[in-house]
Length: 465
Picture (cartoon, rainbow, N blue to C red):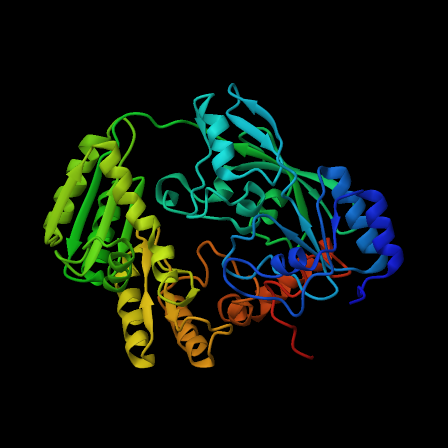
């Protein structure tokens, strides 16, 4: 089938990136979906593979000249359809931009290209006694640039922050091909507006990140005590986690698994995880005071009604417990087609949010397993549907909409870490309101006046005046 792109544009791209313009149907189709299962309208026309900032500038200049939409993409591990391409669009894949350009132990920073995998970066940093904290479930296969574009989170956010807290500066190529540097190599920097922060979490709608200056930390060494506590139900476990937060303790990991998730993981692993209770709280401490902190947290959990509680400082046993939590996605995915959602509420409202999710699940007769980063209030209601479904049924979206509304009602947000992408854009106005939604659209227009950067993502279609 003939490409929808002007032949002159395709020729210019092939000349600018010889051997790195992929028109194969399988590749184009693979880049037209992501881990969420969302698909674009049609499939991408081309997948281009730049190697540096200059290549990305050439791509943007050509696209701008011909008005061709661009979809920046890392590893495609997103769960909101943020890097999904469709007909008439070109994917800018950063998978060959994998250089670690600088590691400065003195300044505790690293400069890398966006296609570097989290796991690969941390393997290299470890040889210098350093570490980059962002810890999404996909950390072994997700890219630094993707983490930044989505402001990714993970299990360690409560203590070490989301990706935003680890980004010092960025090189970004704008839609017209101009490269700009935003942010600072210095720890402090308040010259003008924080454009670096604006690009973090922008989901590729403002420009394409080509270099990342990251704040890294000394590795955390020593004993890492891990606590596993069972509770009567998710609400009880959530109240216990809120008590830990209120006490001033800051565990590195505090994760909650509800009864549905315990059931799914038990089926998946063959290990009985639900014999002692209907909800499980996993807590891990680190640092110089890790042992004493774990003892204090264990006392709080007992006082909060833990039915059983185990503490281990054996590294293998601790890693095994954390892996059980990390296996949650695979466990529910094995049960059928899944819709993984993402809301966050104030930490003292997690119990209320679990109550609302359970009520929605019962009323719509749908299986919802909900893991929670209890240390920061981020819940992932995961709808498990019949195998083979290619589209989420309307009634499931209705159920999801009620969960989103409940999160907003409880003072929370539509997304703690997955982003808005395609899947949640219809609800964005419910959180932002018309004035802020309009301001955000206008910000995008300043950076991308022709609307070629990841069009259709994040923002719902504007209503006629």
